[in-house]
Amino acid sequence: MAQIELSGGLKKWVEEIQKLTQPDAVEVIDGSKDQEEKLYRLLVKNGTCVPLNPKKRPNSYLSWSNPDDVARVEDRTFICTENKIDAGPTNNWLSPKECKDRVTPLFSGCMRGRTMYVVPYCMGPIGSPYARIGVEITDSPYVVVNMLIMTRITKEVVQAACTQPFVQCVHSVGMPLSPGQKDVCWPCNPKDTIIAHFPETMEVWSYGSGYGGNALLSKKCHALRLASWMAKDQGWLAEHMLILGVTNPEGKKRYMAASFPSQCGKTNLAMIESKLPGWKAECVGDDIAWMFWNKAGELRAVNPEFGCFGVAPGTSEKTNKNAIGTLQKNSIFTNVGLTTDGDIWWEGLTDTPPEGLTTWRGEPYVAGSGKPAAHPNARFTAPISQCPSLDSAWNDPQGVPISAIIFGGRRQSIVPLIREAASWRQGVFYGAAMTSETTAAAKGVVGKVRHDPFAMLPFCGYNMGDYFRHWLSMEKPGHHLPAIFYVNWFLKDAAGKFVWPGFGENMRVLAWIFNRLEKAAQAVQTPVGLIPEQSTFELPQGTDYKALFPMDREGWKSEMADLREYFALFGEHLPPGMAAELNEISKALSS
Ligand code: OXD
Ligand code: MN
Image (tube, rainbow, N blue to C red; front, side, top):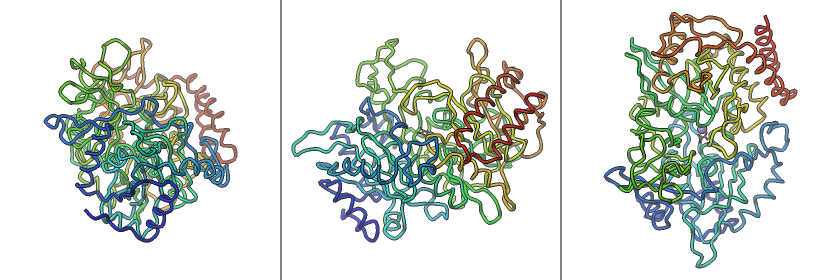
């Protein structure tokens, strides 16, 4: 097949990167089936991918990464702006010049012995006024096949990238090959890994890692870090949020967007199967929402992605039947276990591991050895169009109207199951005050409580104080503001047992939110917001209202004191509205 001809700005840029990185060959990716098949053949030949049993999982592959390249590396991720203050106190900062001086020598000749793939992609439904184009140049065919699932790639997108501005993403595994040098299954360079963002010129330079958000640059780098910068300038919101539609027994549908830190059950909620008779939930997106105000003042959301890059361990028929349905075919599994019949397994997929299992490290699985079959951040990459609970408007160019925004985190105590903000400002404060226990999605200690405002701590491409201000600025005449809520599925009792069953039962919480929007559910005021009135909130058997809605004033007071300290980090960039809300809640807690 003849390669598609490049022109305009794209051609010029590709030539520039080719000159710098010196690949052996250049290939433009246009989404054709032929190309995809060729890439998988290459990945199998190189040992990067193993085809799974087609009778069990058609057109699906397993990959095991280098054990030093298994998660996002937040300490190697930089926001490079002319002025340090524009990156803010929560991001690692380098000046664009300093960073370019650091990365240019790394990229110089880094693709020798490899093919450079040019991957033009569209974030958001093709033809949507809300869609944006990016191009990732990469020397990793594994990244290309993941991008083919995660983004929209067609010949039309290639053509559009030749004539329109696009986000420029350059990625290399950082392992050039000398003539005759044999490649490894998972080339990478953990020692020199760096992921650098240049929001002022809309560029990303990522070197040394082939894993997830470090390497699939459309996701966290483009759709969150750079898009949040664009959104600030253009009056929209680029958020780490799922999008789902909820239909009540009367057939009325409302859409909600929800934000949780990584590995707090976002994909599970996005694909929730209702256990409540008459209620239905349908999925639009599981990780990122771009939200824009239309002329009528509605907040419309699109999912910029085309696939799911979900956490595998813990995903099962019981916890997320729809995710299991999504990954039946045409999927890539990274760092999960391999069964003797050529299928995959991870902790929690079934109650007991199958006989003869091989771990993600390629070793025989030994129960109780402390060596899991799957890495805790093992992932599946699957087309969202395969989700059994896919919403009919998932690809609508006009997006879906958002009526409610839900924040949440993983907390064992203090934070109740659900509460509603009394105002937009209080809701923005909920987002700013988000805390959660750390998980395996990023390298580092697991289980430590950290501030993660709006679940955007690792993903906000600018000063987080200005980001709070941007959210507050959404309250203006003509905007129909969604209501804001905060949930916590992870409360535990004194014995360390979860007090809420979660998963399908979370539908009760979504139904309460829906009914609040319809003015059909009662709430009671507390110093930290509105909670369900006990007699009108139907609880599942074996749960206790008091355990789910604790009012630990002392606990909250120390949360507020800690938050005051955290907010001080932002100095004059903290909008006055946030300090005022903190003072009001603190006062209410003391009265
Ligand atoms: C993700 C993450 O991969 O948030 O979605 O880490
Ligand atoms: Mn995420």
